[in-house]
Length: 106
Image 1: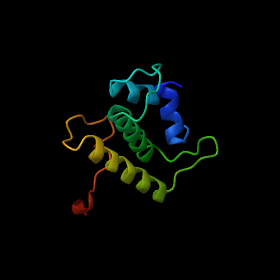
Image 2: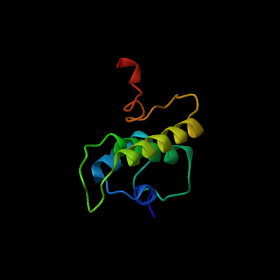
Image 3: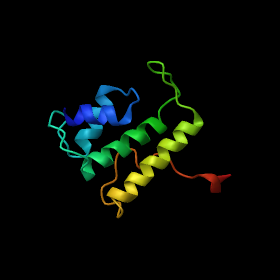
Image 4: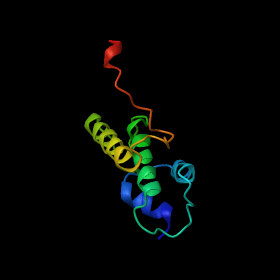
């Protein structure tokens, strides 16, 4: 199994192949490389996928649809992985800062 296949399986929600490849490459992983386990880079890529899904347009894909609760859970999972595998925030992903608490703006 490749890194890209493992990431697709870990998330379980259909996401554009190009988006997955970009996330994998941005995390300095090779999409076609053999999957060797849950490395920090892989887990951060997984968090990036969760965030990508959380901020994606509300479109049903292959019978899947994300509710507000699903998006909240994905954001929580992603933030948990970011804290665990990159606590200093030295390697932000492309989606890491996409969702912010803006309640103070109201």
